[in-house]
Image (cartoon, rainbow, N blue to C red; front, side, top):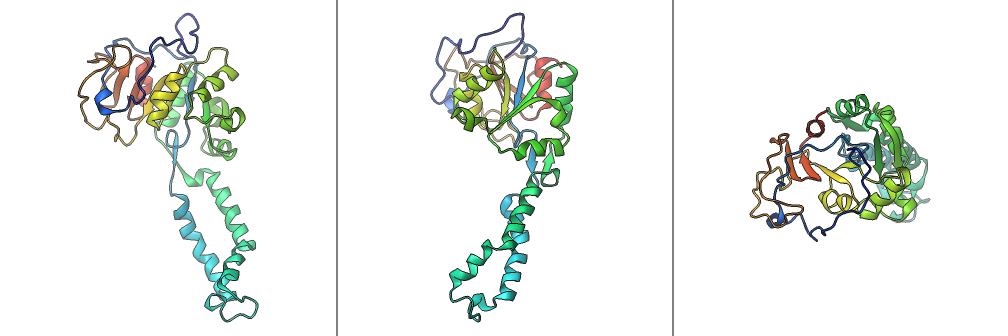
Length: 277
């Protein structure tokens, strides 16, 4: 929710959004020239927004699995063909259920639940700290498992958040790609159900979070979306959501106002400029 002087009710939009607002022909810029009001709450996605893995899970497996394979091969050479205790190749791979694989699993879980596996984006603490300094509470809403809380603490981010919702999609029966996720999420924790929510997934950013009454901030760090890739929209279609030319003073090559309730940024710092923080 964005703070002015009164609370704004959720689902107050009069006109419907496009079924596919991301289509290039349907993208235009807002004529809004006013900055977003200071938010009452900022809800962050975690993966790809605040941190990203140093290596993928397959890369980690590629590093550790050869040691397991070598140990099994030493005990059962020739893929088990020279062992009376292993009559088939299938039996060899069933051995991967033994303690060696259990150890690998434990190592992987411990690794991916710590800062060792992730890179913290340079702007994460800067922006979270600025929000704290301006008394704007931040929350983390994720479809991740309970290890995400350990990751936040390991990266030194835990103290910045007023609350962390994990596995929330399991509790309410909707994922983050469903607009009802946002509505239920904010209604459950706050009487007024609005927030700014930087997202990596454009459909989540435009269609779902905005439909739930949120102001959407789409974080495009790779600058490969139609909004930041230099592709000019062909036409503006709606006077409600997508208008012709933007004159927002905060706009630049790292921030594009799409409407008065949605924006695309290439990093988190422009997010602060949007609110004048």
